[in-house]
Amino acid sequence: MPPIPPLFVLSIGTGATSNIICTQPSPRIYLLTFRSPPDNRMTPAFCKSFTLALDIIAHRFPKGVVVTTSAITKFFSNGLDYESAIKTKGFFEESLYPLWRRLLTYPMPTVALINGHAFAAGFMTAMYHDYRFMNPHRGFLCLNELDFGAPLMPPMASIFRQKLPRPDTYRTMVLESKRFNALESLKEGIVDGLGGWEESYEFIQEMKLVGRADSGVYGRLKEEMWRESVALLDGGGKEEEDNQKARAVAQKKRDEDSLRRVEEWEKEKMSNGRSNKL
Image (tube, rainbow, N blue to C red; front, side, top):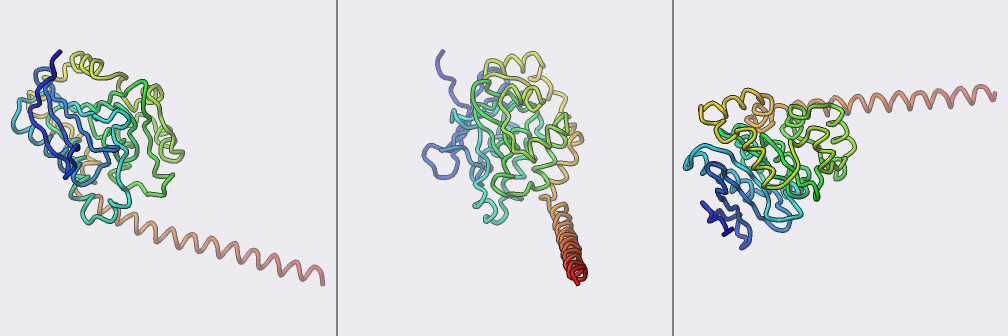
């Protein structure tokens, strides 16, 4: 089979080999294949090119289905460059959250074809798609913020609360940094199926996804379905983050009070011990 000519190609930043290629392997099925070596980190350039690719399809091509995947076999995405992300002014509000909102409320079905590892924000990005298919032979899904000491920002947490079918899966994911392989991910309802392009294509046909957006309300329905996450993304998570800061201040006082009670108990115990010796 001859290679499918691209509908368009977008560069990612200034990297010579970093790009997003859009092809149409079947009528009204658009395949976005991204490559940003070495592991598809979600940099501002990556997020903005990804968002632009979605915009181009939405405005310049007939409605259908968008499938996203990686040209790097080992990784779907290894998440943020965390130190860079927190130091880059406006990264979350201007790059990452707009991409996630675009995916979450996209006016046609989206499928993440997870070919390799999806960690942290890479995993979150897959969750912001409507459906997920996972390579049965390679890759783990993991929220590893616990391991590198990063908090979950509100829009990062909400999507799992809303989409995971079981709270104990969420607990294991967050508090144990469990790495879910393909079979575990399917069992826990994290992904909708296992396989590669062929299996994803069969799923799209079986679910009749190509025509789902024809009535024009697909994106609006999703906006209502996921209103908690949409609201957090629209606010840049700021209101909830402010609440988190207030809770952190209150928790610090509780910790100080707790420590004071222990110290008073120790002091009293020591004093009673001396009295008994006398």
